[in-house]
Image 1 (cartoon, rainbow, N blue to C red):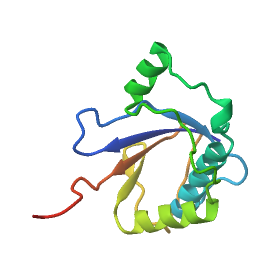
Image 2 (image 1 turned 90 degrees about the horizontal axis):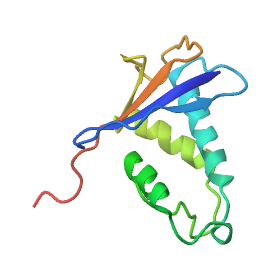
Image 3 (image 1 turned 90 degrees about the vertical axis):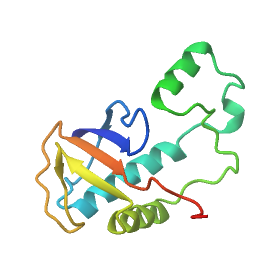
Image 4 (image 1 turned 45 degrees about the horizontal axis):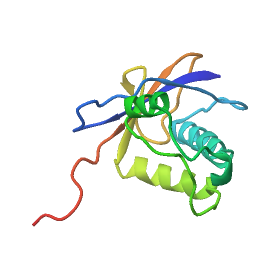
Length: 140
């Protein structure tokens, strides 16, 4: 199933990132929890499949800089400690963050609801993740 994902963060000038296509394989998620689990597992697979530091170029071209600046982050994309991400830990963290209200999920501009809320996803649906943590740090 092909979906598109958008990320938004409140309090930023440019609060949206261009939609990113993602394809979920296997069983279609039947509730919010299974959707978040499927997306996080897919992202961890992509992260772990990245080339290591020695295979990457040691510089960025002007085009690379412009493309990355447009998305909001400029970096080499290197995993400096060499460890692979744990899908189980990432899923657990994402689900806890959703339950704690750190981010909300909208499907075609409608809030997805609680983690056990049923879903009826269709091909081409637009998922929007909104990060709600704006203020971090000390109060004084």
